[in-house]
Amino acid sequence: MTRNEWLVFDYGEVISARTDKLPALAQRLGVPASEFEPAYWAARSAYDRGCTDLDYWRAVGQRVGVGIDRATSDELTELDILGWSRTEQPALELLETLSETGARMALLSNAPVSFARFAERQDWTRHFRELVFSGDLRLAKPDRAIFDVLMTRIGARPQDCLFVDDRQSNIDGARAAGLRAERWTGASTALTFLRPA
Picture 1 (tube, rainbow, N blue to C red):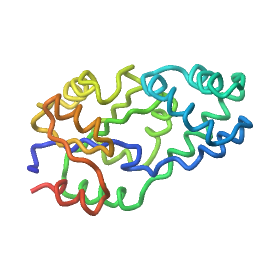
Picture 2: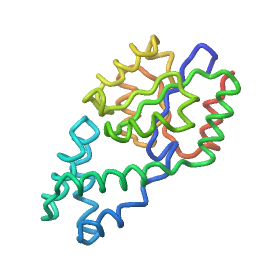
Picture 3: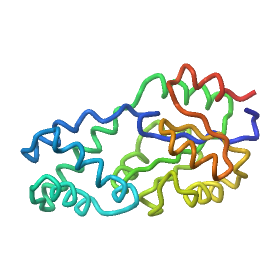
Picture 4: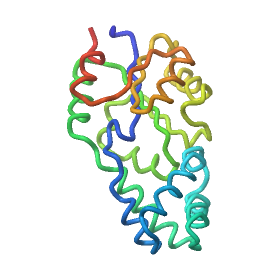
């Protein structure tokens, strides 16, 4: 890539590791992890698109037959954020390397509002000139609309952006919106196409 282009990163399972808190969340609700995990993911799209913490956990709870009050929702949210807060050291080192070369970077993450507010306080965000979270916009990848918002925020043309994500559906959505996109398979391989020329 060239120096006048933008690098756009996903967060979950790119900068962060996959959450390890699903068993603990299931235990908190007193249900088997095998029942909890499908419920957790089934309601996640609405959560990423801006529904409240309480509405999300009540949707999860309804699927597993457990009532959720506000105090329980707050506890589950805190644990969930903790699970997604574990960053991958190789990815952080890559961000540092790219920053040192002057790369212009933005973050585009499908994430609930509560996680977005947590993420904004983390040190790794200093590498990004723009942070875009789906929950704030009530839009989510792979929909074209969220890529259009990103382009407006950073003042760039889609063809001037290289987007990196671990999910093929989001790669496909980015390409449909006119961005160049590469599937994330790890920091060591990503460096080959992310380092500015």
